[in-house]
Picture (cartoon, one colour):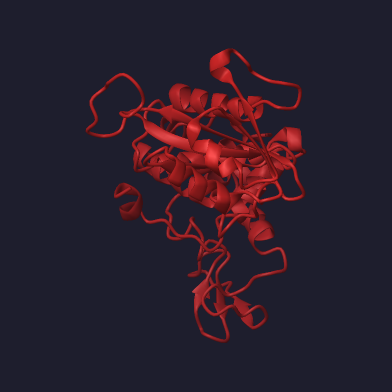
Length: 304
C-alpha cells in the first residue's frame, strides 16, 4: 500500500476511486434505480460529485445508500480506513485508526464497525462442499459472556462455530448460544452441500449430522491424533489461530453483542487472502463494493 497514492489524501481522487468501484457502469440513482436520466450539478453551492435524478428528482452522491452515507469523515480517510482494515491480517484497532487517520476515537470505532458491515456477506452464501470437496467444521471459545462467573470448562465463554471449505478456501463463522447436536446440525445442513465430505474432531455433536453427508471423517484429538494424510482439521485450526491472535492482540476485548461483526471481518479477510490470489488493493476494493446497499446507524451499533 503506497500511502502517497492520491486516493488516500485527495478528496477528488478518493471520490473518483469510490465511483469506479461502486459505479462500474456509471452513476445510478439509489432512490429509484434510474441509470440514464440524471444530471451532475456543478454549481459553487453544490458539493462535489452531486447528481440529481431526472426521474424522481432525488439528489445523490456515490456514498448515498452505503455505509458511508451521512458521514462527516473525509472520503480520503474512508478509503484509507478500508485499505488498513482489509490489508491487516489480524485487524486494526479503533485506537490505531484514531491515531493514523487523525479522527476521534468515537468516529474511528464507528468507522471500523461500518467497514465490518461492508465486509459482511449479503444474502445466503453458496453452500460449501459442492462437488464433493472437504469441509472442516470446528468450534472455539473466546472471552467471557456478560454476567457469567469464571468457572472450569467453557460455559462462561462465548462460543463460535466455523466452517472452512478446503476447495474454495472460504470461511464462514457464527456465534452460537449452545453447542449441542440440534444447533450444530441446523447450521451445518444450512451451509454445507450434502455432497461434501465432512471433517471434524471427535465431539459428539458432529456424530449425527455427519451421517447425512457423503462422507464424515473424524480426527481423535483426545487420543493424540492430529491427522491421517488428508484427514485433519489443521486448516480450520489455522483460521482460529489468526482469529484469536487478532482478538487478543489487537482488539483485546469484544462483547458478545458485537462478536458477529468481528467474525465477519476475519471471515472476509481469510476468504479473500493472498494465498487465494487476492492482493491487498483488490481485497480493499471488494470491501468497498460490499458497502453498497447497507446502512448502519450509531444507535444500532451501540445497541449491539
